[in-house]
Amino acid sequence: MDFDRHDRVRSQLKEFAATFIRNEANTDPMITVTDATISPDYRKATIRFTTIPDNRQEDALIFLKRSASHFRDFLKKKSAFKRIPHIEFEVDYGERHRQHIDEIARDIEGKE
Image 1 (cartoon, rainbow, N blue to C red):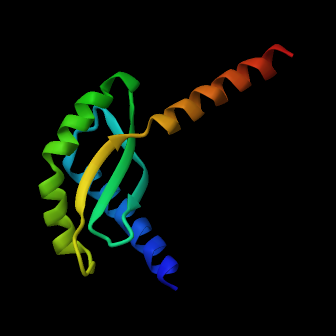
Image 2: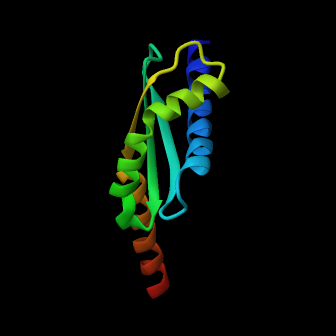
């Protein structure tokens, strides 16, 4: 049953992060939340994201790291979490690699 709660908190954290970014960030670059993880004790959370265009990931990471305390304040106001976790942001390179592999696969299919 604790797994269900953990998964629910993770999902809500991802949604809150997407809402916060939509409201606070510029649209250039476009930042998309791809995943969220939270420690078993709910004290630490990591939000993973990608950007369009790709070359603006570092700019987005700087903005998000600077905004982490504001995001915690947002969570305090909007969520019903018992404990507000320490928030870290990181670029989701795995998602970027998956997209690249999909592009290669489409190119191969188009040549056949």
